[in-house]
Image (cartoon, rainbow, N blue to C red):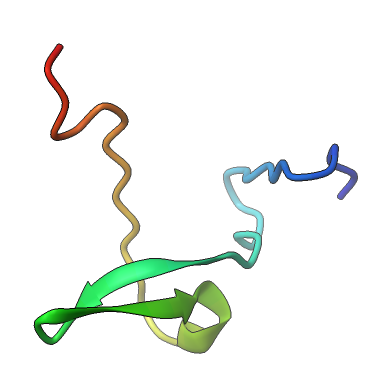
Length: 54
């Protein structure tokens, strides 16, 4: 998969690209990677503009 630097492209039926981000877990924030959950069911939610005045 070729992508411009800093961009990732996901697609239906393809494996999701690995990424690292902050997550709220057990009452606090921690750094997680998608690959930490390989072999498990994962639901990702993205809300652009959530918590902003629109």
